[in-house]
Image 1 (tube, rainbow, N blue to C red):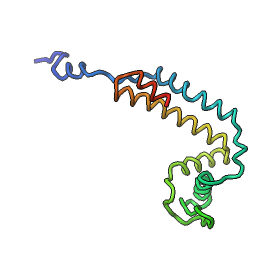
Image 2 (image 1 turned 135 degrees about the vertical axis):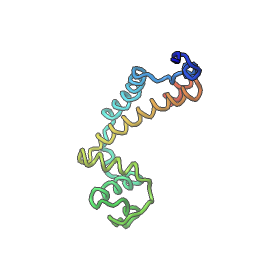
Image 3 (image 1 turned 90 degrees about the horizontal axis):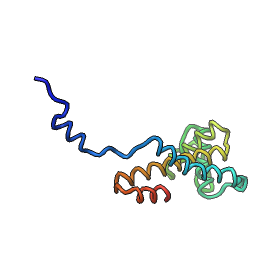
Image 4 (image 1 turned 90 degrees about the vertical axis):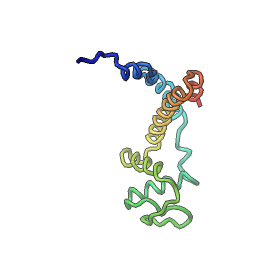
Length: 146
């Protein structure tokens, strides 16, 4: 006996709303988010960051230490000891800096571009999470803009 294409499970699956994902909308959202960030990268020179201090110095120190020694840690405080592992700061941002520095030779502009792209992707992600959570596009646009 052959089964008809409209079995109970097929009807249940058809009744479920599809996620509101669209490649075209995603591309538009990404462009809306990334273009102002890239304009800021070009418009605001990073040369004023020549003297690193505070968190920036710590993150770049961890990235540089990772590239020089292959060990994550040992650069906090007044007595940096490269190659001594520690877990003072979370590793993802220093890993991002190390990877970008390895590929571009410590280009601050390259780091800014990578951060602009990641920030734009986060906006697109926030939009879709808000749509799925609330089914309200107005809320999704607010999440995107935030």
